Image 1 (tube, rainbow, N blue to C red):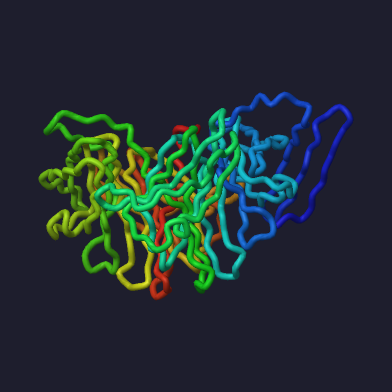
Image 2 (cartoon, helix red, strand yellow):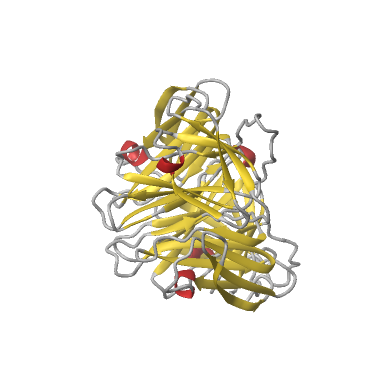
Length: 477
């Protein structure tokens, strides 16, 4: 909450807005004049800002990962694509700045915004219901754009399926949503916007668009390059208002190795063990006109590599099957994969106690030694993590709770010696629940991959799991 706002203006200077906040320091916001040339062409996007007057709110996080002060320029837009005056933010080294979207954009009706400037500063939007019991969906800035996006629907009796799409092209875009069954047959095609203007935004509730139908895959098509956001949330009658981010199953960039030489760069980092109270379903969609093959390299917790297995997916079809069946009941901890770069594999994690909803987590190829994320509302949700050592030597793994200035509040060694390709699990809210901080940094002595799963506490109904996307720090420093 903002304690005071002070707008300062000298005749020879840009207007400056100072926002003093409870325990978070001061934001210095430079307001760009309309008469200035609009040189900033955003290459990063926050595709949605919740409007004033509804039962949701948006909070913006900006973290500077460098050792020097850094600045970014935020370029806000109205829903119809009209560009508003930019806002410049300065962030101290290692610090995290947090502000409501209303304070940040002076309560203008901002629909979405782009980001220019220092790549050392990462921006995340947190969306949350204003209901008393609710959780935030933390969505890092979007850098990928495309004309086709795939994702797997949730359990619509428990959750709704929201979407925001921004036209990043130079011409009006025709935006469609297509519901497909497991064999690739179209069940329904809906035109979401016949002519979405450049830099305009279109919202849709896809479970409403496809009401009365059950499909396996949803494909979003746009005639111009677009940025997209999928948000899933519990229905209004739920006792807790849960909102969470769904990553689209975008095509991977990994090439196809020669047969027998699979050294995986693509990973599913966690399979739920038997008798854990959770199940894992594997999903993959072949978008090609011919069959594709994937080589799967299964590993156990201690990194024991089992014999590869091969999945063949027919043209246009989707593979949807319980992991226990695909691996014939063998206790697999995680797996790597090689093969068609256009066929992405997704793991869906779900509680066995009904009603429940799945966390859909696409395969990852991201490795780093340091990751950062913003914690959830721990009275309502737990914070689970799986880390896989992708290096060649045993590693240690630390979790570090940080305050808004970037100083360490608490550091905990999670494991002293994690073997290459082995996995370690941790529940981070249990470690840090008695301490106050704004961010958690995961540090690894070897290159690693991290999966964050947030979920409702045991006994809560509906039981909902969802993925939180960590920010890889090293590429941004």
